[in-house]
Length: 370
Image (tube, rainbow, N blue to C red; front, top):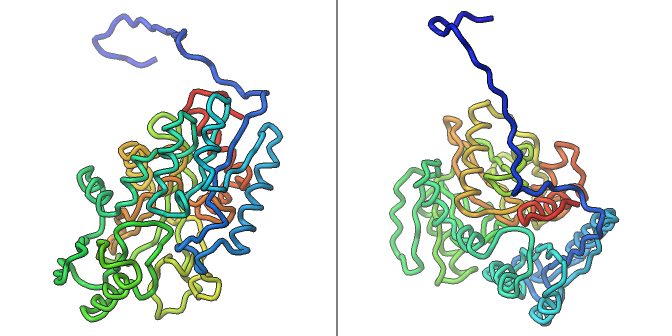
């Protein structure tokens, strides 16, 4: 009932298209074979505090098994022996199976070889959950991801890349700064001493990290931003099909005021540290901040070829603009990890979250959902 001016006659057309080449997906009643691939608990792991799988790690694996057992439509097998891993995988060739790749420790518990696990799976043609070797290689290199984000117009904190042989460091921004290994994940090498406020503290941090992790590895010296510490979790594979979990913010209110507000190694691995008391809460954001975080995370996921489940870490600057810190493909899957905390804010239980990841993989592979 609007006057459309010069248009004296209006023709309304409705149409429907049936795409014959698209197969409608439905929930499968057939039992799905799942092979869960984990780190090897019999081998050392330098990222863990005692360099071994301890009782907490075994408890985490037990809770994973319990959660997966709740899904009666799954037939689950576990692979943890990395000495026999190649032959075990070859025995699965030709079977209707999906590997739930939760081996974020890497092949033989070597984080540098995390990408080797999906590479092995691809070499024998077995479908698996999570990101592929190329994505894992990209995201293992923090400086590379920063450069790609900058090229895409996504803000990152100012930083200086220190080559292994660098003896002079000319930081192009004001303190405070944070010093971290350029390679790695699980906040390995990032402690309260990593945040520095003077040139002397910077030298001490660089010396300590090189002593602990080797003089042959590069460092990233990044401007330390004062704003909220945020994480964005995505289940699915952008741009085709994905769900963004509630964005979380680290609550540092229980942390003594003289300690830098970071969620580093102590927060994840040391129950005796005051950092153990950090909590993840629902982020308090403006609509503009929320939209930017989601848009940029989705852009990065697509560009870096992140699949099925990914976490993006951000920090606000003094003006409230988000800056990318890291991209974490195949992030921590444990019951008390960041992804599980995000899901809990939407009343998604741990077992449901695991099923969502599996369904994201099945959807990407064109298979029926569970």
